Image (cartoon, rainbow, N blue to C red; front, side):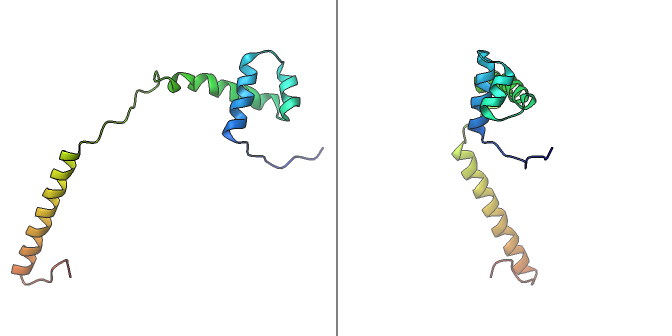
Length: 101
């Protein structure tokens, strides 16, 4: 029996197969023959779907992105610019070539 080359399935295909398995109106064998995928692979995709479904609705890790505070970012840019100017002036007084040319 020869082995088939490795196939990469799209996320949409995996979701479609996993949802069909969750519905339960067909057996794994029927789904495997319909989608030409091994039954164990269907079981894995179904398990992944069920495990990660809660994250989709926000009950997962709770890592929502914080809004960016532009005032804080502008203040930080100002601090860094001031430090650069100070250090460049110190290098010039010391007789060393400046970082900017």
